[in-house]
Length: 375
Ligand SMILES: *Cc1c(COP(=O)(O)O)cnc(C)c1O
Image (cartoon, rainbow, N blue to C red; front, side, top):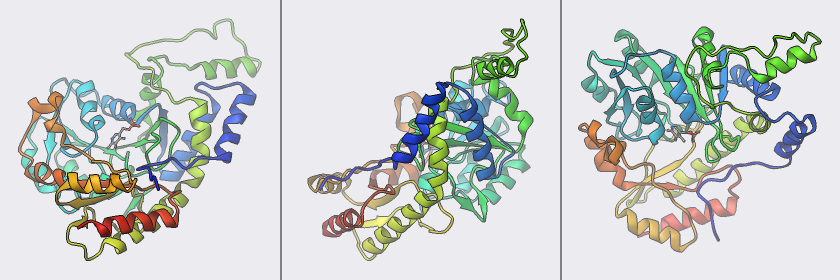
């Protein structure tokens, strides 16, 4: 048996939806993106959403919305994907790495307070593996210090904390639709916020700074109001080519309809995994999975002798991953290094096991027996 680590759950419905875009021969930034943005806003419960081509782009633009002065500091977890800290660098800000909570792998609020100083302007929590950071505490801590909260929800599309969707607790939420994440558009991302005014300039930033996209101009033309000046647009700020396109949005509209079902299926598999490894001494769950309204993206375990464990899984055809080597250990981020004893110690024990909605019951059983057989 060969089992992948992640696998997008896509099929006939997504294909039919793409065909629709083909039939209308509008593949770029257009009506499907607008529709996906509307439906996404309704789904998470935000006023406004802006579709982009990745969560990396979403994080970059979200942070840029505040126009923080160069050299200010942004608090980010030490254990995350590079994009979280990269967003600070893109904005000429300094990433300050915060240690993680040993039991949840999310931001450690005590260390957050230790790392905070007056130059900090924002904090970017990551719901690691999909497990929520205690957002009520984090948001009140941040508000008391005048910090903006940008949630990196790349691991947690559709999950809730205390009944409120992740990504809507902070000032801005950023989501990933990369192919390995909770739902996919191939590559893609979304920026959501209740502050519609704040997001308005980001619609221009994602389209090279142009204040009117080609779809808007085409619509004017179609509505029979072709104005000889309809070609006219203005660029008043730096922009990027970060837009989502209609092909991605076509897939996204279908995936969004399946997201809750996919999250429930992942909960079911995680329930079986955690029951299956219960009582083992060499392999334990790295996250206190709370299988209710969740959007767990990864099943992460802690193991002693990680390399031997990975080899044992490989020998049985089971793919594994490591999420992540702490960012301050990467050459690029070394100069921002700080004391993060928990992340530095436990990342060496972390292994990610296969998790995706289309895992069959036999495959789940097979993974569990392989882990149980590890002595
Ligand atoms: C995947 C990921 C991102 C980046 O998402 P892309 O859509 O691939 O750009 C950002 N943050 C975290 C925590 C991620 O895991």
